[in-house]
Amino acid sequence: MDGPVHGTQPSEQIVSTPLELLDAVIARFGPLYCDLAACEENSVCDMFIDEEEDSLARGTIWPGVTSRAPNNWLNPPFKNIYPWAEKCLHNAEKAPTLFLVLASVSSEWWRKFVWHKADVAFLTPRVKFVGYKAGSARDLALCHFHPAMTGKVQIWDWKKGILF
Image 1 (tube, rainbow, N blue to C red):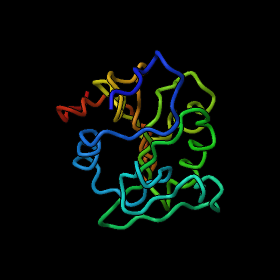
Image 2: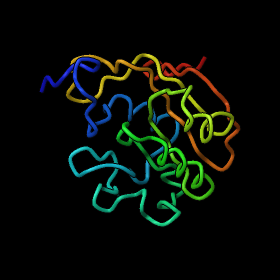
Image 3: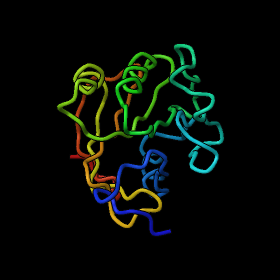
């Protein structure tokens, strides 16, 4: 599937995270427990919450993680990030989450829920989502919400496994 080139088409809200990035994430952070915004076709975990179950409407706590799978995964639709970021922060203590998102550092949601809170890794090189010809037209960040987060910011070359 060729798919559209990012930046030339309207944003698609259902895309799949590339296996190469997921392998790098798992190597660095451990196995993933639940995909919090997925469908059967694009889930990266055996357990997932689809649009019908709506993880934003699901009580206050997302599924807890285990020692074998220490984080949930969240690559949400990018059109309205605010509620996703807010819920990541509020769930950080009991449901650690790796949140793949646009690096929108000037946005209100970034300032309120990410900056000086989550541990952030700005991703390089740019991520090419499944079905697309080119990498994302915008920078992405992997925000780690967890009980011991310090607000640390790094650049992560996820293909080489190098932190800057």
